[in-house]
Amino acid sequence: MSGMTTRPDRGGEQPPRPPAVETSVPPIPEQPGAERTSPEAARAATADVPPTVADPAVEDGPAPKPDRAQYGVCAFLALVGAFVIVDATRIGHAVNSADPIGPKPVPILLGVLLLIVAAIYAVDVARGGAGEPEAGEDVDLTTPIDWRTVLLLIGAFLVNAVLIDRLGWVISGTLLFWGSAFALGNRHYVRNLLIAVALSLITFYTFAIGLDINLPAGVLQGIL
Image (cartoon, rainbow, N blue to C red; front, side):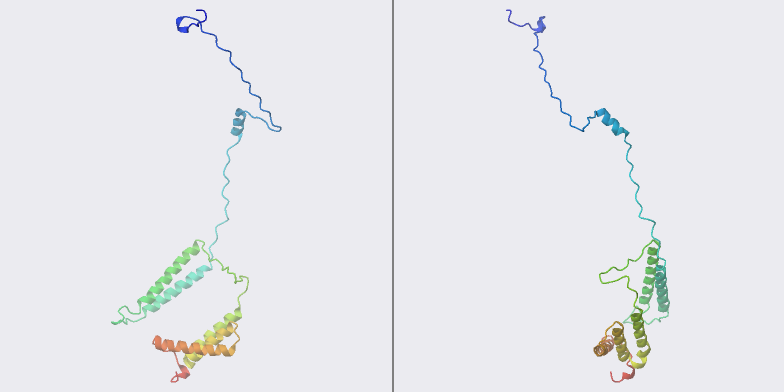
């Protein structure tokens, strides 16, 4: 039985193995301008690069200084609140069944609220708070104040305050409304006069009938 192979466990020799087939891999052509780096060189190059440090935050600048002019507004509100409280303490105890609270608590509460608003406003100014300028489409912030219009309006109110007791509200109110329209640039004198008279009469009878408050009639006493 010469054609049979012997098994290794029985003491025979192992049969010869077929020769291994060598497979050749074609080399990859190198691209011009490209350099091949080994993994060790890549790791070394990466180790040489120092870690990047985050850029420090860019500061916008120094903190805004408080607008000290706003403290004048705070002081004005505080003075008004204190004046209202002091003036309210002079009110007598006019309490009746129809009004058990009386007229004193309301102005006192108003004065206390004014003091609170002044304190909160002062704290906000101290922390750098400031009002933003108006930036409307129809507002030119570079235009100077029209002092002529301001003075004419102040004059119209002063004339009304001086003449309201002598001439009465209807006449002084007519001058107030007509003068305000003139100060604001309206030059329709006759139409403005008629509108001013109508507004004065409407407000006079509205206070007299609707609120039971009689405005001064002045020289028109007995006519109105």
